[in-house]
Image (cartoon, rainbow, N blue to C red; front, side, top):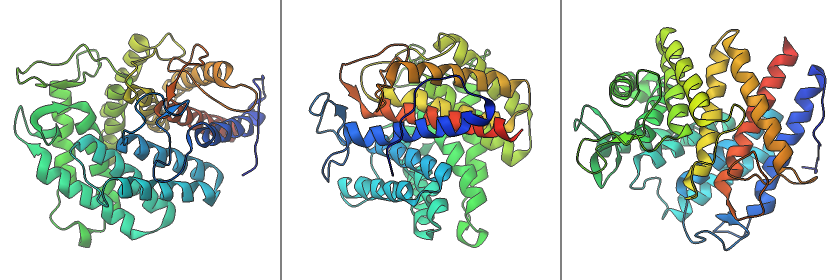
Length: 369
């Protein structure tokens, strides 16, 4: 893949898609440029290398790298991106001791979602079988009735339930329902688990205004963690709602997802970009999750809601490009409204990639009208 640079400019609608596609390529290549390293580390956790916590194996960050590379493959048709997604899959499994599973149900569900997309990108059924194996493991080990039938966050806290676990459970369940042949599905009740988890989310963690809280009973006291106001919880509820609306045909669910998207933008952004959500590293991925599933929502909506959210993505990615592009590479801050020379985790880079890939889809759709 040859290097392509692009600078901010005002473009006609017909020129916007190739411009933003080139910019998405820059963002994708910048991940390798700034963070790529020798196997088995594969990707440095932070840039400059050695900052942050270099030795940590970030299983779920790598799952999102798979997703990002598949985004590039779907956009361009260039199999080199698909190859990188497969390489990332192998890195996760090798560094995870040759197995798919770990102690965190949300981590495993992120991996399963990326693996299922890899199945579609490659046509290899073994990847779909891996996604089903993760599903079986998660349900067997983590689904329980504490606080209402739903999925725990991790094996060591089976009574602690949250959006990061139950949101991707709904998304994966409904995608597997569509993808797994009936002969292979057996007695797995994908739809039943999805509808139950979604109802639990709405009853427990979604407020009257649509804002989605993080979790409940983390300290064994039945308390909701209202202090953790994160974009990815909003994005996960939106993604789960879109999948359930698609499977059930109930468009009222999309109205509730739209309400959540609006309150998330109003409460967590400055109208263009989301505020820095924390310095731990995981937080760097949160806004990318929101952009991914906001994109799924706008595909299901008509005007004027679609235009409203497209405009938000345009404002944010314009700001991102202005502050993070140095003339050759893209290196974003955790807060896209400013430049930074400080250490950043690669989770922050992956969120920028996901947002820019969504911008390309907007411009491609607009050019086709």
